[in-house]
Amino acid sequence: MTPAELSHTVLHAVRRAVDEGELSVTVPERAVVAPPGPGGCGDYATNVALQLARAAGRPPRDVAEILRARLLGEQRFTDVVVTGPGFLNLSLRGTASADLVEEILRRGRRYGHAATESSGTAVRLRCPAEVRAVVVADTLARVLRSQGDFVRVECEGRPAPEWESVLGADVTTRGPRVADRDVTTRERRVADRDVTTRGPRTADQDVTVRPVPAPGDPLPLGRDAGRWALLHPAAHDRPKIPGDHLVQRESNPLFRVRYAHARTRALLHNAADLGFHPEPGPVSEAEALVAALGDHPRVLAATATHHTPDRLARHLVTVADAAMPLLPAVLPLGEEKPSAAHRARLALAEAAGTVLAGGLSLLGIDAPDHL
Image (cartoon, rainbow, N blue to C red):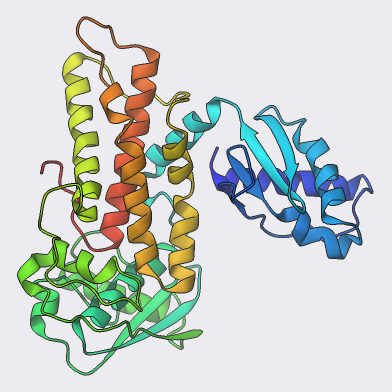
C-alpha cells in the first residue's frame, strides 16, 4: 500500500466518523501519511487528528481514538496506536510491501510523479548566469514538471554553452518534458507551443534560484559527477569542486547510489538466467527499504514545493543504503531452488532500482546498468 492509498483510507475513516455523527468537521482533501518520527511506532503515522481537533472542538487524542476505532476495522492494518499528543501510528499487514512494489513497477520511473501532466501551477524560475544556479534551475524545472507544473526558466545573463553541452543544463523556455531523455529540435518546438496552448504563460509563482556559487569549475568532472557535486549540497552550503565525486568507493554517495542501481539490474539478469522472475510479495526483513520507497512521492513533492534538489539527492542515498543489505539474499545459494521469498526480494530490489533510476533522471544524471 502506498502513502497515497493510506491517505485515502485515513480520510475514509474521517468521513465515516462525520457521517455517523461522532465528529463535526469538514473532511480535508488530504491526510499526510509518512514514516513515524521519534516516539512513534509501526510503519506509518499521520497527524490528521491534530489537524482536525480545533474544528472538532475536542482534544486531539479524543479525535485520534475515534479514528483509531474505525481504522482497526481495516483488514490491511495489524494495529493502530495513538502516541504523543494524538498521532495515529499504522502497522501494516505483510502484503503492504507487495502492494507498494507492485505500484512502483507499474508506474516505473514515473512513480511519485503527478497522475496527470500539466495540472499544476505555472512557475517562472529565475537564475543568475552562474553554473551552479543554472544546474539547480534546470533540475528544479525537471522536478516541478514531474509534479504537473508548467515551468519557464529565465537566466539573467548568457549561460556558457558548455553548461548545456557538458552538464546538460538546459535553461531554454519550454513546457513539460516529453520524457526523461534528450529531446529533438522538433520536440522542443512542440513543448514550447504546449506552454501557450495547454496552460498560462503568466507565472503564478516567481522563484529566484540563487545557491552559494561553485568555488571551482565542475566541467572536468563531466555531466553526472559535475551535476551531483552541485546538487547534493544544500543551497546554502558550498559545493566541493572537484571533491571525490569520481572515486568509486563507499565514501562517495553518488557511487553508492549508482552502484546499488547497477546491482539491482545485475540481479534481474542473473535471476533470468536461473529461470525465475520478480513477483511482488511480503518481505519482512527490509522494513527500512520499504519505508524509504514509500516515502519517495512525498520527497518529490517536498523537493518541488521547497525548491530543494538536495533533498532528492539525499533521499536517493537513503534508498541505496537501505537496499544494499537486501541484495545478497535475492538469489538462491548453491543448490537452493528459487522460492516465493526469492521472487519477492527480487521484485523489491527491482523496485529500488526503479526509484533510484527515476530519481537520478530527475537530477539529470545517468543510471548505468554496469559500473
